[in-house]
Image 1 (tube, rainbow, N blue to C red):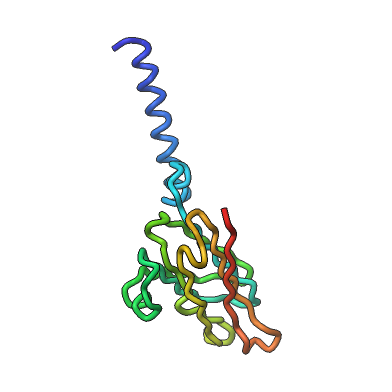
Image 2: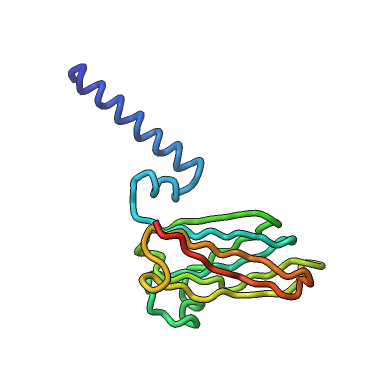
Length: 154
C-alpha cells in the first residue's frame, strides 16, 4: 500500500467515524440531514402551562382519509412538559400526510381536555423540506385546549 492510499484510508475512516458519532449523539435525523437527503421536519411546541401527551400519526400516502391514516399510519407518542419543544424528521417520501391524532392537557390528576389537529397533506398544505409546527395552548379557563398548525417553507 502506498503512502497516498494509506492517507486516503485514514481520512475515510475519520469521516466514517465522525458520521457514526454524530448519528449516535443525535439520532437518525442528524445522519439524514448530514447526508443532505430531502426531509420534512415536524415540531411540537407546548405553549401551555401544563404537561401534554401527544400522539402524532403520519404516513407515506397523502390521499388517505383521516380514519384510514389513524388506522394504518405510524404513531409517535410524546410527553411534553410545559414550554417544551420536541421534533422529528422523516424522508419526504415517508411523510406525505401528518396529523395530531390526540393531544391531552394533563391538568389535575393527569387528565384534562383533549384536542386534535387538522390533517396536513403534502402538496396541498406543505412540501418537501418544510417545517411543520404544531402548537398546543389553552385559554385562561384551561377548558379550551387547542392545536394549531403552521408551515415554514424551506
